[in-house]
Image 1 (cartoon, helix red, strand yellow):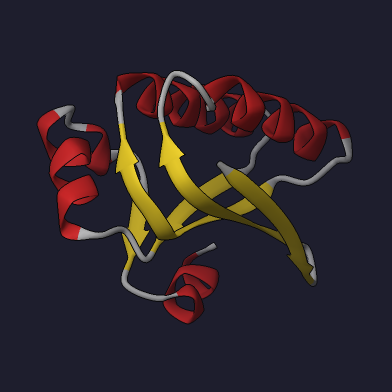
Image 2 (cartoon, rainbow, N blue to C red):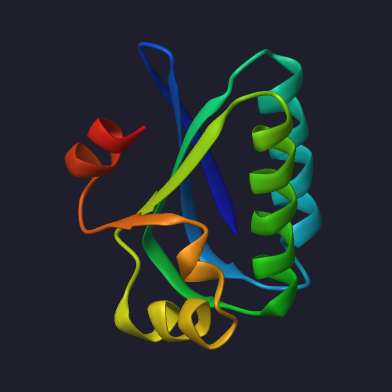
Length: 110
């Protein structure tokens, strides 16, 4: 898993590459902690290069979502492939996250 952070105005974009599974959830969790510690509350997660997400990845995203809500923040997702959308729908978390086809639309919703 590679994680790249980009900042556009007051939005933080987290670009993920690889599989978001139990082997890498902790890495993402630590990245999220740093984002919050730095005072960022608008987060867009770009899934364009994520081939697979498992339940530990979903749990990490939920944790970040809840932590952002506590401080009045928001989180959106973009470029989620059909396979991963299925995982979000099965677990019903797609109702919590704003999931957008592209970065531009997601940033407007943030």
